[in-house]
Each structure stands twice: as C-alpha cells, then as structure tokens.
Length: 115
Image (cartoon, rainbow, N blue to C red; front, side, top):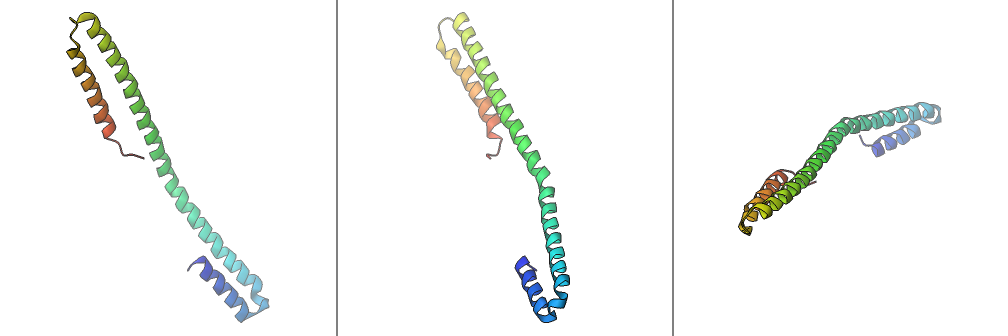
C-alpha cells in the first residue's frame, strides 16, 4: 500500500470510528510511515558501499591511466633523445617507438567502461 493509500485509509478510519480513536489512528499511521522510512534508508545504506567501492575503483583506474601516460611520455622522450644521439640521422627509428607507445596506451585505455 502506498503512502497516499495509507493516509486515505487513516482518514477514512478516523471518520468511521470518530474522534475517540484519533490518537490510535494517528499513532498507527506514523508507525507505518516510520517503518517505511526505515526500509528505504536500509535499502540505500545497503547500496551505498557498492557505489563507494565502484567510485574508488574508478579513481584507481584513472590514476593508473595517468601514470601510464606519464611513464609513456617520459620513456618516449628518452628513447627519442637516445635515437637522435646515437643514430645516423634516420628518423625512421622514431616511428616504431612512438607507434608502440600509442598501442600500449590504446590497449590499456580501451579496456575500461566510460563513466
């Protein structure tokens, strides 16, 4: 029975029984509403830890993505500097390094569900 139905039933009972039973009817209605509020709060509390855990996992994944991006850029920069210093001027050696970095980042970041 919905809250509106409960209220209508309480008002109807008050009309049928008269003012002598008003206190009992009001107490009964408030007791039912209190139980309904408790039930809803319990449902929300039961769902809250799951939402919290999921948010924490999302933050950890975001941190991992950021760390991978930073490490990738650092290693790519170092590799580019080393290739520049020790190669015979061929820039073709840069391409596999940066393609590898892009692929690693794409594979890692492609395995997550967007929020």
